[in-house]
Length: 263
Ligand SMILES: C[S@@+](CC[C@H](N)C(=O)[O-])C[C@H]1O[C@@H](n2cnc3c(N)ncnc32)[C@H](O)[C@@H]1O
View 1 (tube, rainbow, N blue to C red):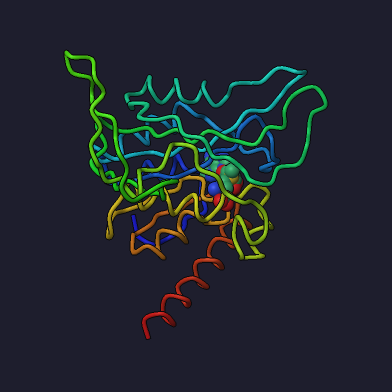
View 2: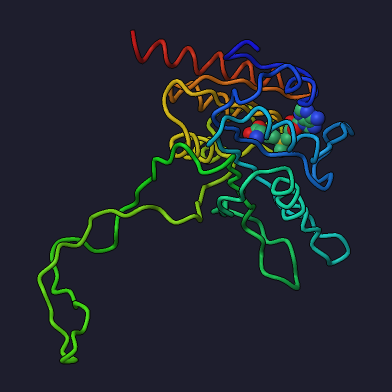
């Protein structure tokens, strides 16, 4: 397969041409529960999970962003059904992360407003790369810290340094919509883009420069765009030509941005 290319095809066809153990990181969001109309294309989760397992390098990771629809007052739990399929084909469910949306419209009169989707972290064995993202701690400087009680039962305090930053939690929050998800107006011709920052945060966490990032259902090309901007290689594909056109346009524009930055 050509690196840094977006294919217009069913992802199962594209993956069938890929070598075993060739992809470092996959970041994708599948169509689920017919929540959006993707022109009626079929979606075979088990076949896709099996192929992803075959093409992922040992220690490679798949980020699977998925939510649930409510049918007659009942959550479908498609998200967890997908996770069980990935586990069945050999992946570890390394983490169950939450993508929290900052600005969500009120949708239900008899339940709290849903403001999240799952970001499953599936790994082929133990992840070979983890570059933890950090966030500022609420307090820093020095403080009298309580030490473990000794046999005499007295609390001894010592002056200790507080860290100014800590590893982020596994709930990540993003603004959505224009200016949040992306500034690329063209991306909104696609009905379900995920935030650029979400893709970038996973790219930085689970891969290194020069690695190969794959998005088998790349839609408007968010994963591929953020791969280029972070000096990774990408392979993308989508079954719908009109989304591939959007993705290619966004990638052309980001390549131009990169050229301007380095010239
Ligand atoms: C949730 S969207 C992905 C959006 C993307 N993450 C973005 O930021 O734009 C899912 C995409 O899967 C594509 N799709 C559905 N079935 C597919 C298949 N079998 N092979 C490849 N793409 C498929 C749809 O056309 C749709 O664009």
